[in-house]
Length: 196
Image 1: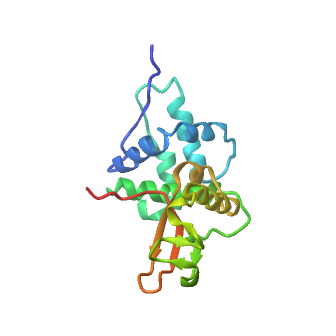
Image 2 (image 1 turned 45 degrees about the vertical axis):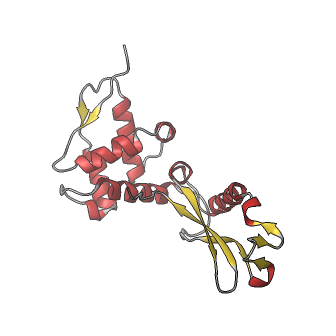
Image 3 (image 1 turned 60 degrees about the vertical axis):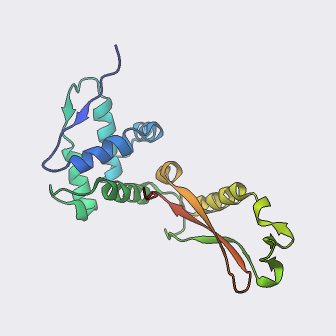
């Protein structure tokens, strides 16, 4: 017989929270394993998520659990979602992940989200006519390697399980049509909005 899945009961209009918890947190096996291995006893949203994982995985819980502990911690730590009003699920998930990152982060430097330029060349070293940077074709640059270097450097300063699982990097390359200067930049993202 297959594993029984325990649901999460609605507390007023908290279906947005339930959807984010079930699809954005509990459906991510590496994150579930992380919370299963956590044993800190603190007053954090991360502790409430640990409790939720334990309850959902508990075979004695047959139908649904009431996420009151999670909701109380969210109300205290992320006041925008206080109460039982309806909210946008994706906005909630983004703020929840950001809050969990801040609670679980490792690194000595203060958290500053910023983009970082990996490659900038002046017009003197760039030929806009043939797309060369110091004699090297733009298309021959190993962008994946550059992106991995940027992510590695970024994570040395500010890292968490949330960042490892949910964050990516996007590259943008701009060419100045006036001077031929080329600039490439990587920026972190946790969600991409795709237009249909």
